[in-house]
Image (cartoon, rainbow, N blue to C red; front, side, top):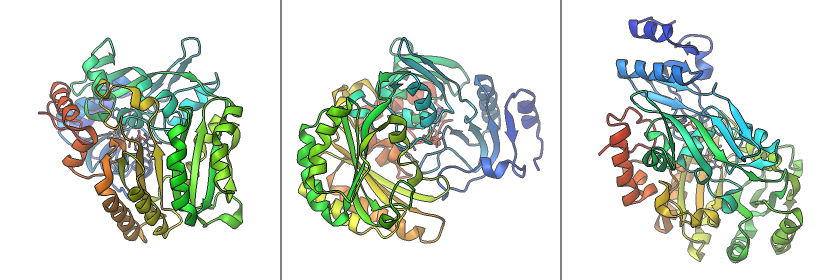
Length: 460
Ligand code: FAD
């Protein structure tokens, strides 16, 4: 049970949400994050119910001087949203969402998960670009950029962000948009949680679905060399409505996949066409004609079902380790490495998506947001996973080896796909001029680096 100090008492007197201390029944569950390999023990978990609680918890953190972790959906690969000692501000209770179907906008609070926002917006046949697994937090995903199945048509999540409300390190609530605090708005769009705690996001929405054409197609993994070469040529001429990802993995034991295929090593393609069903069928037809797929789950389906299709592959609590990189294009050398790393997979939990970028993302001027990968063609995402500690070292080795093999070909890295890889990698996610600008902004909004549990940009 907790020892009550005067600081804790002062916070308790001024807090509407729940304060959870080590030893209390809820503590062990609340301290967990998505990645089961992260095992940290915050000194206090503050379950905030609004801006007033966030300000009180920050004041406590400033008074006591320990580390401050901010948690949205808890999906940070390296576990940046928890800490040993200090205070964890858990924003999961901030679930408010308001859709304005006339203006085609949505406001969402910091604890909203991707699937929760999609559910509300799809009630009006609308959506904003987000990620590919519905239990990911909207906050962390958006602050790094936000890539997903709508990105080539409508851009990144940040390209659809209209405004944010932010609590700064000093506890001030400010709005940032193109017109108000534009410097902060620039940095928030890609700079992660470095500049403050975003309490609410406002997004532009687009008509999407509710039925779209998409899903997963899979071929035996030994077809990968031909498929990747076919794919490289095919995507030079596809419309922005189509976004795709290649995944090398063993087919998972999930109900949507016939039992006789479970565990089969495959090269899979996930596609989403966010236009008419007929156009989708026409655009995807050459891919289906490449060779008869082993598994064809690509069909007209609710957008919500496409969004949640990969959820069972990334459950909370498994042990995960990841390395990522962007590449300009799928050259022969890159394809040879991609194939070899796929064939080297020896676990049913390990996989690696290669996302297709380009389209609307690349038409946004590089200096208009802090996101670094506007000109990248593809982003590789080597994800090693095990149910628990057993065998984790071997999967980490596969990830590190894959990352090393791709190193000579990489053009950068998406900040939300970084683990703890050091300052040089963070710089390479932004490039020198964006990084320098972010450092100046950090100096202005968080000169003591209170918010350092993130892909940290220290003040200059
Ligand atoms: P958290 O762990 O809660 O937070 C991540 C970081 O953001 C921490 O540093 C935290 O302090 C900070 N933060 C969180 N909330 C706030 C806030 N309100 N204000 C300020 N800082 C805050 N990314 C994509 O772009 N597209 C994808 O399709 C995608 N798929 C993913 C699937 C899975 C299964 C996982 C684990 C990750 C995926 N990612 C994807 C990466 C994802 O964007 C990042 O892991 C992101 O940080 C997750 O956000 P979160 O709120 O869940 O994380």
